[in-house]
Image (cartoon, rainbow, N blue to C red; front, side):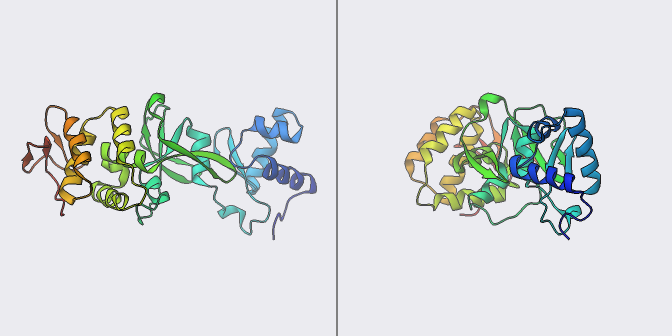
Length: 266
């Protein structure tokens, strides 16, 4: 029953939105492609949202529901495209990026997005979709690749940047255990690039990344001595936690300056 209840004029409007505005858009965008005044476009979008043929993601941001959708009320937009439209500048990262690069089989219902915009709350719902947010300054939005989702260009952290982010904050990988699993998968890949990963760690500026990376690589036998020495040379003073998401307890590795508050088996 595609497009049931739509007048011919509204059907043509929705068709044009789908054809020319792939992904999320604003009333101003709709006004331009439809050739109508901004106020009229805004009213029409509100009306179509009530009918279910346009989804309102947040104030001033919409996405057109495909006319062929059998059940427009339950149609869902692509979360990557939504995040890029609502939260840019930024990139898809963390566990979402790990899954994209086949470094984890774990599927999370929440999409991780790293944004340069201020983040009042780490969890946010946009258009019925859940997002896990982290703030980074604009200068830290490096190490990404562009992919196309629902006709929208989206930045996603590349494999090395994804791992550096998860070593910096293991919760972004779904916890230390998932981060360790992803690192192990990466180490077995034919295109492993440890120097790039080290370079990203240098650029990010958190030396605890190298403590965790070096300890894990050495304990699990993931890399040669060149990586181990690179990590040792970049250790900072003081003692960090192997897993910042767990209580600070357990023995300390003086070699790596880490409180071993989580068990890693080799």
